[in-house]
Amino acid sequence: MSGSVGQIRGLKVGHYTDLESATGCTVILCEQGAVPGVHVSGASPGGREIELLRPGYSVNLVHAVLLSGGSAYGLDATAGVMRYLEERGCGFDTVAGVVPIVPAAIIFDLSLGDASVRPTAANAYEACCAATESDVAEGSVGAGTGASVGKCLGMEHATKGGIGIATVQLGNGGVVTAIIVVNAWGDVIDPTSGRTVAGPRDADTGGFLRTADLLRQSRMRRPFPTSNTVIGVIATNVRLRKVQTHRLAQMAQTGLARTIDPCGTMYDGDTLFVLSSGDKGCDMNVLGVAAVEAVSYAVQRAVLQATTIAGVPSIADRQR
Image (cartoon, rainbow, N blue to C red):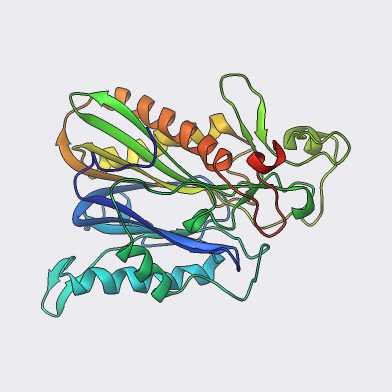
């Protein structure tokens, strides 16, 4: 199941998309609060409120997560989510009013479109206003607008990435949903067949090359493109403690390892958040397996649903 987060209490997803400048942002709202977790596997991450999400820190609820293009500039867009939540009285009560907690992570998409245009606070506010529980768009929208994959040979050989959503049913009404922005340096792989779904384009054959093979053959563009990073949210209606959400984020990373090769490189800032909002029960091993499956499906959907933008062709357009 894709395009819906309605089975998870209080969760909504909204996009802001700028097709002309090839950038955008996506907000995942949980206005009543959700128990967070996080795992950072890439060596070049960009984020906000990341350390606060780890076990042992005092904050046990967050009110939204922002996924954004624009590289580090895109982190400024978080202010728009903060304003939206403050206006609705969502956040921790303090003597000075409510303070929403909004973690964020960014991708580098400045190599496409207009690098001087990045998601702003106003854009993120607009994404919040557009947030919905169902019929959430996928592909080259929101934070996935300027995403691409397979950049070992440079952007002229890259393939369009995007954002994908997939839900796995757990039984007893429990679900786990992955919302993944795929902007990987490496390739997207079908974990069942091992086939390259999207990667560096071979100008001679029209097919895809394997980044791992190119690395072994020392056939890569230097300096390496920095326009990378896979970010996302794994949301569930299973009731979890913070130490469990942290573990689930680590387990879900396997979904990236199965479908992106190589992943978590020195040129990626791969970051996965977890949001737990609900009262369902589930064994952690079962939940972890389902999260890996959801991430794997979402990664593949991100490139399969993408469209050509700024001269970077999508799989769908190449197959026509």
